[in-house]
Length: 406
Image (cartoon, rainbow, N blue to C red):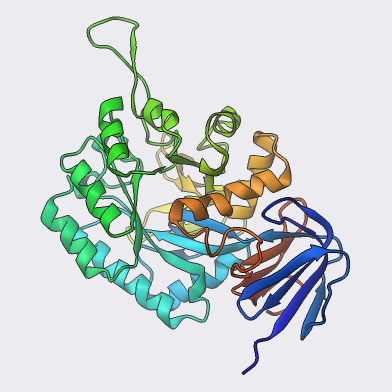
């Protein structure tokens, strides 16, 4: 059967090289076959006039735990299907679903379930794979991870996780100071999995060792990542830590949560200045409840309640010292990028890089997606200049259309 040709025209195209005003994109089947300015040089089976809106590469969220009432660690297959579709509303065309520290058997079973959901969903192309965050984390820097599940990366556990999950794991976060971390890094690299530093108070030397072994990314920098420390033998003399190592090595990309509560605004400008252009990444680290209306209340399986407030989740508790405390992110990718553009004072096209080609580079997907270029997959969104999403395409298929049913 002949492949369908779709043309987007009259757009501000965020092309891989430079933006094109009054531009067009020609898509045949799954892939981009032509881009240019003015009127397209051919006709298509369907032509969409975007009327001056921004045509951008789709966003890649490489660290998200959930959306709406979907939780990547707990949801069943039908609910995971719902989640895949939900991300498209916010311009996301690739997701790496993050698990949470749990018994290893639970993590393995859920990773397998997520893989099955990908294969059985009409929106499964949105899912790139699984990000395993925990249980190999530093107790002091555990954040929202339960202390009782944390442990060192024992070799038998690592092999079991990697052998039993069918290749669905794409990244693993761990603390470099834990025993076997260099060995773990080598095992992940050998399987094409991205080793990620995070939830750590590692020294410079401990971080450097895993970077030399192949670690190439940092989970939510400035959240549960300890930087400098005072020399115990010399008062007021500071010792370098993990932060120094990951800023020194240009090969290591850094992700920030696109939220001013989790990341104070100056850090956005700082990373924009200090890291190479393709090593700056925005993520949501979102939890279930994300994308729901303001003040929505959610109850977890243990009966604890949280509510959505201005892009974060906060606790509901009888104890006034606990009530209102931050529990996690509820930011969506389009809002995270809107904030980045404001906080780091970036042009729209440069901000979009942090959520498209840059995570694609980190994940090794940049040959197929992450930018608008002839030959790449047509993972494309249409939005206005405030990042309000109008249309989302994955592999040339419209899966979200604000103006009507996709």
